[in-house]
Length: 215
Image 1 (cartoon, one colour):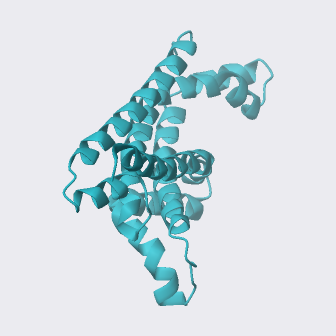
Image 2 (tube, rainbow, N blue to C red; image 1 turned 30 degrees about the vertical axis):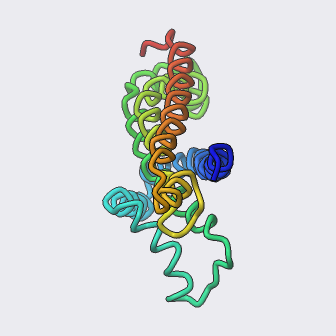
């Protein structure tokens, strides 16, 4: 195969990599916030159930979770996932990253001094108004560094989708390696480096925009 044919094949795999990345972010970011509110709920059963969920997800490999989402519905419940292998992969990624994001959110929210809530309420603001008008941007500022680490990890973790046959970037490179072509594996590394570099630049820009929140 020519260089351009291989390059086109890798670009197609990179397209699926981007799908996994962006869909995971779009769904896991808000879902993680829901999980955070559950883990901080005053309703004890919900709080402990949510924290147990987070503990299980964070304590087991993402690869195992992908296998479970892919195989369990069919083997245990007789539910067919159809011919698409992308959907089970996306479900596993979203659940996994929502759990990790939720802990980052929780740490950010709990790092804000209680005195800020009290000061806002003294000024006649409700607790909800204090959160959205005073606390939220400070939380965003504090969680950006750990969030950037998780998002960069997601860039690399997308390669795990190959274990259930999702044709993403690394799987295509591996296909060529089986035929004695090693350079596509190194070439693939450039895709991941460029993607991770772009994510890093975006988060650095966001941190600078929020630099005036020193709290």
